[in-house]
Amino acid sequence: MKVLVTRTDRLGDLVLSVPVFEYLKSAQPDLEIHALVAPAAVPLVENNPYLTGIWTWNENESADSFKTLTDGLRGENFDAAIMLQYRKELAQLLLRAKIGLRYGPWSRFSSWFLLNRGSRQARSHSKLHEMDQNLRLAGKFLGDSSPKVDFPQPTLYLTPGQRDLGQEFRAEYQVQEDKIVFLHPGSGGSALDWNPNRFAGVANSLAGMEGFRVFITGTSVDEAMVEKVSLSLDQQVTVLLNRYNLRDFLGILSAGDYFIGPSTGPLHLAAALGLGTVGLYPPVPTMSPGRWGPRGPWTKTVMPRVDCPASRLCSGERCPHFNCMNEVFERDVLGAVMEIHRQKSEEES
Image (cartoon, rainbow, N blue to C red; front, side, top):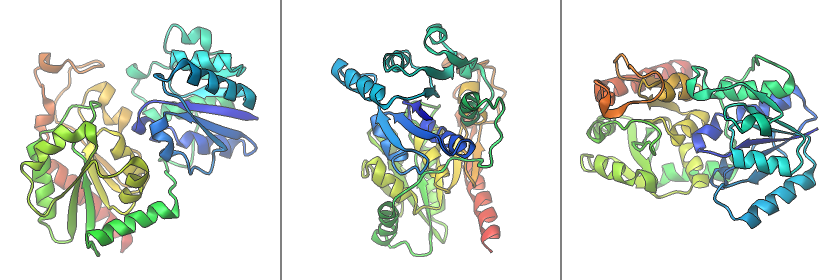
C-alpha cells in the first residue's frame, strides 16, 4: 500500500510530524510512505529512512506547477493521503490526483467535503500536544484511535557530511572540550518576544563561565532581533547571523550541546538532534509548551508566572499582563540550562 503524508507549513511543525513516518512503518512494514512538504523544509526529511519519496508543494506556485504536481501524484497511484495540516487548495489537488482515501482534520467547512476519512480536530482549541495530534491522525489511518508509541520525541537524520560540518565548526572556533551553547533570540512571529537585553545577559553570563562557548544564531527574519541583542553582547560571544542554509545549519547544530530560544523552528531542530534545549514560552493556550513544547531527550521550558486570562489567543496590549514575557528573568533561563547540564553530567558519569 502506498500513502502520501503531507505537512507543508513551518519547520517546527514538520519536526513534530516526523514521528508519524516511523509510527506508520513500524505498524505496517510493507507500507510505502511518501512525504509532501514545503520546498524549504526538504532537508528535514531527505535522509529519513522511513520514506520512499519526497514531494514539495507551495501554495504560491504557478498553475503549471500545480498541474505538474497533480499529474505526478496521479501517476504514483497513491492509495491514501494523510493531511497532518488541512489546506483547502492542497486537499483539492489531492482530489484531482485521484487519491481515493484522504485522511486529515475536519477543521474547516470545506474539509468535510474534501476529506472522506477525516477526524474531528480543532487544534487551536485543543490542549493536546501537536505531535500527539499528528500521531492520532496517523492512528485513524491505521485503525488505532489512541496510538501509544515507543519513541517519545522526533528524530532528524543527517548525512556523515553534515556531521563533519559540525566538527569543522568546532575546529574553526577552536572549541575543544567546551560546551557549545546556541542562543536563537528570534521567534519569527510564532511567539511573544523576550527582551533582547535579557537574551544578551544570558549569553554573556554563559560565555563568562568556564567550559562554555556561546553563539547567536538567526536568519533574515530574525535580523532585527539579533541586532538588538548584539548591542549588549560581550566580545567572547559570536554572532552567526545569516551564515548557513538549513542543510548546513543542521550539521552545525549537531555539534552543539545546548540551545536556548523561543517557540520557533530551530528550537525543535535542536531538540530532535539531541541537544539540551531551553524554550521560552508565553502561557497563551495556542502558544504554550503544552501544545508546542520541544520534544527531545533533554528539554525544559520557561514561562512567566502569571495567570493568563486568554481562552485561546493572546489579546496583546488589552491584557493586564502584557507583555508577560517580561516576567521571565535571566536567572530563570540560566537555572534551566544549569539543571539540564547537571542532569547530563550525572548521566554521562
